[in-house]
Image (cartoon, rainbow, N blue to C red; front, side, top):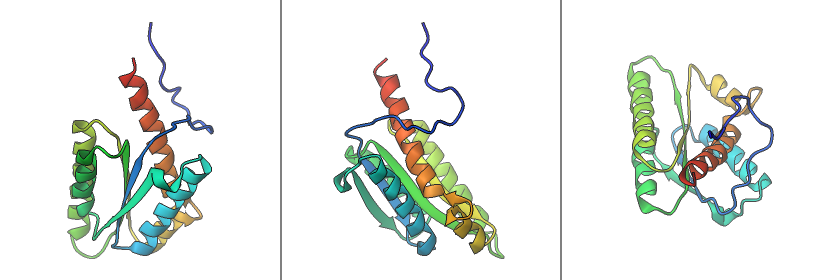
Length: 163
């Protein structure tokens, strides 16, 4: 017998995940954007009945530091999922490409090697307006979507562990 863990279609109802502990790591660089992403996530968690004690927010200087912070939080064994929020805006140098590649590979590696989900909430955009549009603007709040993904991935991991 097989267990279906997803229908492939987005659901409107989130699974109940009582007792889930979440760490959010927010980059200070482009803080007006990452702060909005964090607020979106916190609003979603509160709407799902999470208490302020269930979710802790940490800050790091920039996007490259997100991987180290997530790794340390995983090693602490205090959290069931980690969400990282950063915002990298394309400029006139290759720095954008290096930062995006570094953080993407770092978080991908953590997801492949660790036992808890790390949710990638890093905006990689061409300009500030693109970021604002995704941080509570006309395209919604990717922070809210990251919180939804954290709940769903924690539920998925819990289901697999209990099979």
